[in-house]
Length: 207
Image (cartoon, rainbow, N blue to C red; front, side):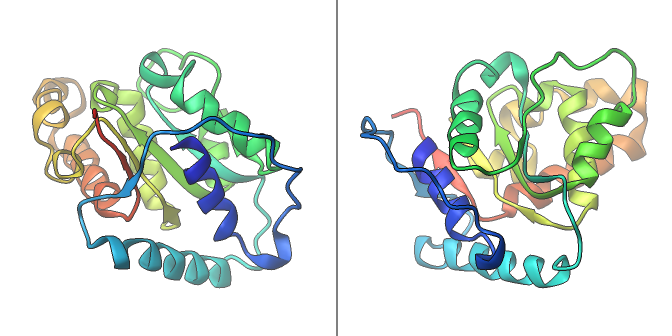
C-alpha cells in the first residue's frame, strides 16, 4: 500500500520538476490496494491524473515549500502507517510535510502548520477510524480544502462513504463539537469531509 501510493504520487509529478529517485531496494510484499469506492476503478486514477495536470498548470509559476502534505491523526498512525509513507517519500526525494509533534493546545491552528498547508502542492489526508475525533484534524482538513489543490485521500480501514456522508465514526463526534465551535464551524468541517472524501484515492480494507 505504502509503496503503491508513493509510486503513484511520483508518477503524477510534473515531469520538469520530478526528482530522480534512488535505486529501489528489494521491498517486501505490501497490502493490496484499490481505488476508493466513490467512482469506477478504471476512471478513478485517470481523474486524479487529470486533476494533477490541471493543478500543475495553475501553479506552474508558484514555488511551494513542500510537494506533499500528510494530514493524519497522530495517535492513530504517526508511528506506523503514515511514518512509512513519509520515509518512502523522503527516500524518493519528495519534499514532504510530516508533523512529528503533538498539536499545541487551543482552538486555532498555529502559524507553523498553517504556513505548511499554504506552502504545499498536494495533500494526502490519511482517513483513519478516529480521524474525525480530532478537532485539529478537522480544522486542518478545512484549510486544505480551501486551498483548492489536489487532494489524494487514503481511507485506512474506513469506508469512503462514511467520510463523504459523515456516518459511523465520522458522524458521531461532530455533534459534540457544536457547543464549543458553533454550527457554522461544524458545517464547514462537514463540507471539508464531503469534498475530500469524494476525491479519487486509495482504500485499505481490514482484510
